[in-house]
Length: 114
Image 1 (cartoon, rainbow, N blue to C red):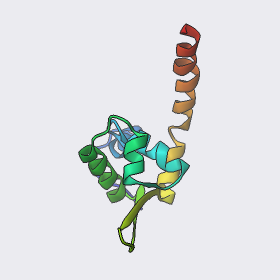
Image 2 (image 1 turned 30 degrees about the vertical axis):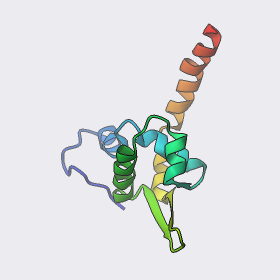
Image 3 (image 1 turned 90 degrees about the vertical axis):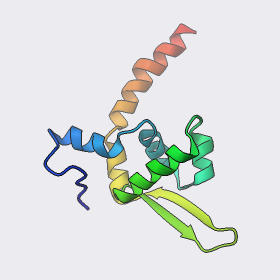
């Protein structure tokens, strides 16, 4: 799948990737879905501070871009789970070094201050 939100408008690959994962919550949604599939309510509890409206909007955008998959189970009551697609898994590998940097340089510094 090729994602082209703004064809010809990207200055570089980072600009294109940030267009896909931009937004306050998308990185955290990717992180949560990396662990396992989640239902909507589970994601809300795991991401304190996100509103239902914003979570819905960002999940829809990730789904439209082929990053997240929405599975509807025909049960009563209906069950819906979100998971990463193979494209989403590959995208999630990109910020891993950034997360490692944050753990070592920000979180470790906060622990040392206590």
